[in-house]
Image (cartoon, rainbow, N blue to C red):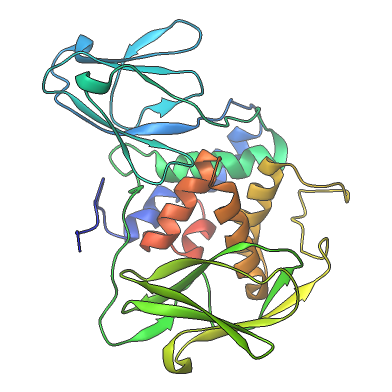
Length: 304
């Protein structure tokens, strides 16, 4: 088994420090809206000269590549240095993307989405603040093991009954402790998901009806009740009953994770999992949650 790759390591307490100015920043964020990135350069090694690696925007602007630089749909990442190696994170990619002179130029493609303002813009800006403080970026391809021989609830998914709208969903099942298989039970049938070497796994939920999610020996589990498709809490900043856009779904999921009832945590996580296939912010949030680098109370940090 290979060791998890750390892009940037930092103590968990820094998550709270990073968000200590969040409330102030969100006020400022409501005054403007920016186009959303589809990825970023996680690491830029061997960039000794400005021309060793550059990013050319769709507008034609060219700038030297550097760690933590945002990437947008249509960007071209060009590496000229013989010893230069960039590692990219792009939403929807299963693994980090290395770019060297051998596979340069690399064309960035992804769903950027339009600019958002108001409540949605504030919530999405909070993700940018969380992940892009200088030298404090959260790893994108890291997941940690817990203590062997123990199983416990992950702070993002406590052991309480969960509610989920009807419809098949890919769910993030999280726990703390040792690696474990996961089993889904419904109406006398059972489906086993192979043991992950880490402390989470993604499962496909039954499309309808109540079901149980359990870990071995019933040491940990969740009972899940299905409700009508539109019976899920909406943040106060989302008015009306129209179908939510992807950006609104992500903003609502963030709100549920930090302010909503714990019985809707599995739903919020499933929204993040679904959106992470194409949305940069959701993908980074999922990576941070699965790695244990942030916890729900980090999203509630007050300004100091």
